Amino acid sequence: MGPEAVDPKGSFTMAIHDKPGSKQKAMTDVTTEAVSVDIAGPPMEGEANVELCCCLSKFLELRKSDVVLDKGSKSCEKVVKLLACTLPEEILEKLKKQVEKYK
Image 1 (spheres, rainbow, N blue to C red):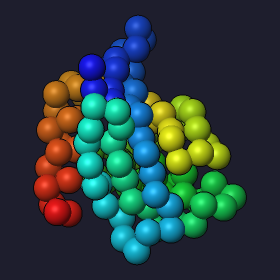
Image 2 (image 1 turned 120 degrees about the vertical axis):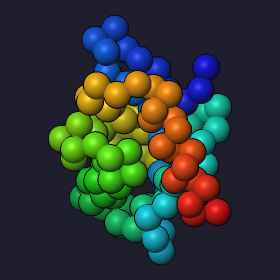
Image 3 (image 1 turned 180 degrees about the vertical axis):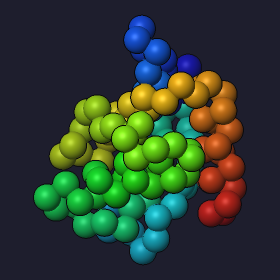
Image 4 (image 1 turned 45 degrees about the vertical axis):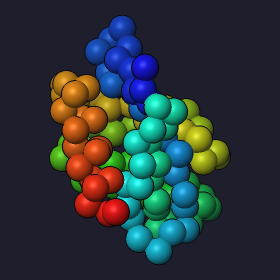
């Protein structure tokens, strides 16, 4: 089991470790525990959470409305739900390509 799961309703959820206040937006790692993402937005008033969802939608080529913060709004450890009908394999492939892009 990786950092992802498909819930009974068909939504894809991912564990995310984010690092707000970074110099650039980047997907930095995909491990068995979480997907690591650097976020340029500051960790105040939800700005980093909004930027995280926007970054993930861009990285995964999804609409912004298809990426929803499910848990962890005040933590670096989050759970993000993807509402789009996309295969988990496709999502993980896109995540890994993003990690390679920033290495």
